[in-house]
Image: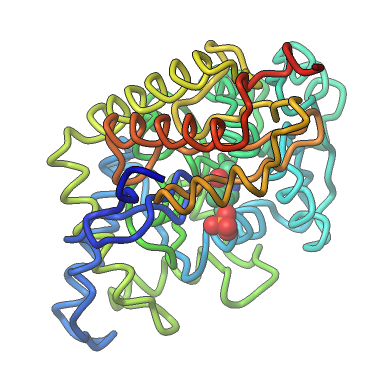
Length: 383
Ligand SMILES: *Cc1c(COP(=O)(O)O)cnc(C)c1O
């Protein structure tokens, strides 16, 4: 190894992962204080954070952010179980692990479930989806994932939302890995609720999920929830009455998220953050393709969030050595989670810039050379 390992502003390896991800030093620094959960200082910061999230969603005056202590899945579970009534039926649109997880959440909660599943590299066929809605009037709600992080595919959420609305059903969106970097504007995309979290494109630390809720839809949710802690209606009422969480909030996480949202605004909001991620993705994809690697997805389906690469088929390529070699050089990548292809993933979100991507590419080249692998693709596999 001839170069110094790459590192974040605080000396840690760079996380080329879908979150938790590399955060700025100032976001981490925001956490070195104590606040009481009933303290006006903290209550004010929390209020600002929730309001800024509504603004980012384009929901001022029409929507409210209801936070949920925990990781992103806590917010997804809160959304599904608070919005789909016990008598409702949820159609889950699936093309990856996060769609599967939503189906499981609804089943455990005892809600009636239908699924529309396509392979992980294939977006839903909206005509088929519409036909399913027409054929089954019992379906009250549709759940869809914005960017399916399993593959990195960008699902056609605006078009899907329009057809769900046209069919008179309600939409729940998992925009976990897209919110803050890929536009989804509540003024044009009609949904009842959208879930995301602190530790993806907003570049905060993990520990807070949140659901952007349409006010009039949330007002209908009293008594739907099947758990106490994940009841969004009750949680929202708590804020309306006292400005406070019902149970201990992850205070440091929320204060760090406030700082992260400030930095998001300074970068130019959703447009600015998205631009940097698109640059990161382009540098990474072009560079990896130049070394023979093949992406799972064609460019037109690829979100600039996380890139899935086919595993090279050269028998000298050993993934664990590849992973460890990159880690030694300061870059942490992500194994694949796909059923359609043997693969690995590299993220382009977090406090990472195109130069970090160039550094990662140089590290990939070095590790391939060490393994004496000349081509990263499946094509020139056999020797
Ligand atoms: C990250 C993510 C989640 C939430 O995962 P957690 O591990 O609970 O934070 C949900 N959906 C999608 C699409 C995600 O990328």
